[in-house]
Amino acid sequence: MKIYLDTANLGEIREAARWGILSGVTTNPSLMARETGAGFEETIRTICGLVDGPISAETVSEDADGMVAEGRAFAAWHRNVIVKVPSTTEGLEAVARLGERGIRCNVTLVFNANQALMAALAGAFVVSPFVGRVDDMSVDGMELIREIAAIFELDPDIRTQILAASIRHPRHIAESALAGAHIATCPYKVLLKCMQHPLTDRGQRSFLEDWRKREAEMALPAAVDD
Ligand code: G3P
Image (tube, rainbow, N blue to C red; front, top):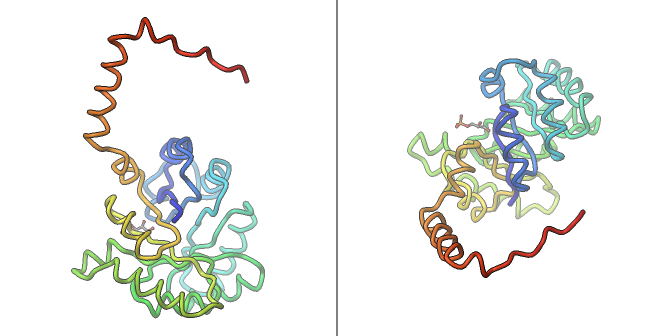
């Protein structure tokens, strides 16, 4: 399973990109509205320069004509832009029409398996089931990923990838992978939490303490020239 970062914050994207784990970035209007400084187009273009993978930019029109017009403009900004449209009937039409032009779409705000199936049939590149928001309704969000994965598996014509979204904590990531998601898009703070473990810190501390006791005798190799 691949990891995307779910943010429009350039500092977070730069930092996570350094770790060598990022395959893409997703944004949405709320995440965009949280950032100040640059406009939408400049932000998306900058993200495309930081991460060489699918970068989702979300439409804000409510009708298919508007989504198609926005999507065509977004796609012209960079070859990695994926047009994000809502899981509505207008959104389905936009996916089909943008697909005819070779423009890839991410169908977002998916809360049931039928929405995912319809998005796939319209030709979506990825579908985004919102795990955390389903959990918030006292329903198992991971079951939604499992159901979509099982349905997609049954139809060899479906190439749409499952992008687990609304990831709230580290277990959501591992469980999404086990449930059959192709991608999980994660907030920066959740990725940081994944790498925090008290036994890692304790082990590293004790390795270095032991090393330093005999450091003088343990000559490290010289740095290799580029
Ligand atoms: O990718 C969608 C995601 O940003 C929604 O997350 O935490 O607002 O439910 P959340």
